Image 1 (cartoon, one colour):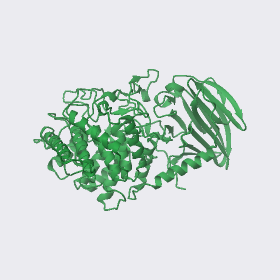
Image 2 (cartoon, rainbow, N blue to C red):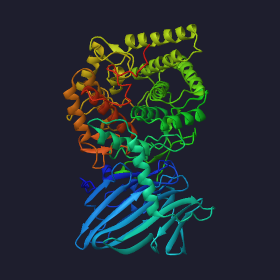
Image 3 (cartoon, helix red, strand yellow):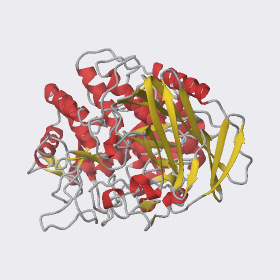
Image 4 (cartoon, rainbow, N blue to C red):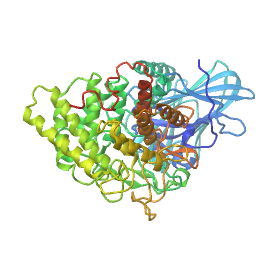
Length: 629
């Protein structure tokens, strides 16, 4: 068994947490054995443990040694090989103990399982359980039943019930406690199961059997990863994190959390527990590059059920079940992570206009088809509808990829991705026998018109760089995607000039990349928000990718290695890195960080001449195979 790595911090930082999940939902477990964020039964359900965004009064579940200093940070933790089964180990004066946390992958019940194993000697342990449904706002009614050797404690706040199975817990004014002893070779099991309060009690299931099944399922999924290059361990861990965010119904959340701040103490706090079409498309694109098409098919089915051919009602994000109403509101009873207010539920950006979205969707579906996903007439019709929507809207200003809450602008990245939407549509049309010459010519003319417009209005010839928006002077890290999507080749002087300008003007001292300047020359916020933010990790990976594309491979590898060093000891990344506080910030773990990590690893492996099974899309220009005609 591989050695466990030691957690590198004892403070309750964002990166002190690990993720366990069932793909329907997930929980964050701190390095002292505390579950302080859990939403059941879905990612976007109200949290029953919300201490992450407040205090312990807002709900948690802690298991650990009952020694002086409890809670005690584990001496070691790790994921069990290629799974999302999380293990913590403590060494105490009287013995050592292991805590195993996971969520079963079956869809019969939303459940978290915790198993305590005695390794050596004898260890006194404590389980502290404080359920606070409704994001920490409600105190439940506790009822107790006994079934055989299992004690059942039910915490109910209508319409939800949470069934705690395992050792007898004594109910107190603020929760429940169980003190127990574990010796070498012994194990004690606990499970927490959600069900509607008007349903019968959920069946008691074997935690040990669930562990065997969950570990086997994760290992089987990981074994299908086609990437065998130098960065396999890093790629596989990121792929497992992405898989954890892929709901069985086909939706994909951007992150399992809400309101972890991009600016500690500030207002840049957002709810990421929804399906952004962009983020989901990028996730599907990357997983397809690793040989995974089941997730692509599930997402395509979800997309057809959510959007169909009704592109006129296109939203940039939806609920996991395709819900359109994501009204944003604030939870005043929660003080926020490190007093970062407000805590937001819902997301007001759902109603924004973001012209790039059809491009990412088309790109993802094409990549999936290249990887082996069977064609679909319904998907083709949906893509035609999105292409027509793009034709009708591409000349309008929008809020852009960064969802600014300031005025709409003609963002260059949005126009480039409008070009991608039409370019990928043309590729699909060329593959279909029913396409007419006139139809193809129409879309080719539109593609060339968008390209010419961007090059004329989005490029500053005096500075030799593309700009954030038409007529502007500011830069934007999303411009790094220009060569990666095939809009221009990497050896184009305008591309090289843009890469060098971003590296010069948007990089921190560590060489990581900001999305854009949050303040203009007058000191005003350009995105309509107060405060600042950290280096955006996706943008930093994009820079490494671009550097490799223009031949600066060693510089790209050095940057990539520095970015890998920002991961926590479990290989997880939040959205951003605060270069001043030297810590991760933003929602965690973040799909939008793990996607480009994998993409850049594939790029660097290709630059090193390593064969990538199934990687038909890693072309020198960064375009997908078959996307240029």
